Length: 551
Image (cartoon, rainbow, N blue to C red; front, top):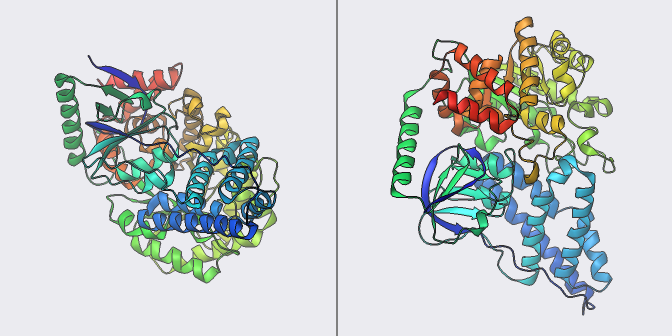
């Protein structure tokens, strides 16, 4: 008799197949005796970190997309000089290479957990780098994705970005993890790969290898040992979904013709061709960090101009919204961020870095303006981590002085949402970053699986902030977009449009699903769905109410 495990669906699709579980990493080293040769052990540890860094960078280059940025950040962890110094200290104290690596990573892990916020989110990534480095030092293989010789449903306690980014969609049918949340790396990368995925699914690792499961990446249901009737129903749902996706093309519109701009998120130059070929109206979030990461100083204005010009050319005649450098917190840059901030998530990050380094922002705006002048893309620029109307107005003034006509800001801080009317009075548009807005609204680490229900973008408190912002945009006759993960949830997209959002930006793979759902509902029906979600007691109840109304 079948039974169902319930998690959080983070990437839609309905599939069935046999389970293959991810093996846990090998037990860590236990030696505490003296190192026989300090120089030799140091060389082993150094080589292990270098090998891990090189492997992560190579995986990132192969994977592209959001994965490249995530894996690049992990590679930077492996190459951190402070980490190498800590490892060397433990070796001099008598530990062998593998044990010294484990001890050094434990120190760094404790520091990140203590800082909380964005840096605490990096603990899972740090653990993965540790496991790989220790395995390299010991000369043993790092446990990876299983290869049973047939397509399978991958079940894991959690997935490291390095594993998720290199999954083969021909072999992996779906992903189910016990940990993780709706904005975890697993969720983001699964969407980019187009794989159904369920996270925060308790007891998932108790499912035996080879057992057949039916995974619904929209509802979060994982049915164990499904009956033939349940399998048939799953195939019917997936066939209906495929038919729906194939039926809608072109600009986003509701059933009664209300326009909703459907845009893509773009994070690195290597993803440009695929993003430009997607059926979208442009780019709603062009992350510029890829130009600044892993280098000792900022790129020149001319180097930036060339990179931006390539994007504007690929999206000629379409919208491109450029986000200025979002450095700090989980994206520290040696030439920008301070190493000793007590709480980086609440510190100098995003637009706030311009207080200390205004020339960095001025150079970026000059490069964007020069590139925009040579093309036909409709270029807009927005700043991250804006909190006050004064910040928004000052940023817009800087942008306009460079000859760029459209200046906007990210609404990621509750203060900006609550004062959206005043914020919009000083700029041309806003875009809601629901990942950060959710985290700051609920004071909940977005990588903490046990807090996943708080980080559910269906939570009414978050939607209320969206409603306030959208109402301010409507009153000012200015666009209000969403470029966080919430935009890629096809049912939540209906709610967002009902709240007054005018554009949605997402991974290219999610465009057909969102477009098709919008085409099936009128604007009034979307507004009614929004009221249901706002009235719900929590995120799960909101989703259930909307799903029940849609039948």
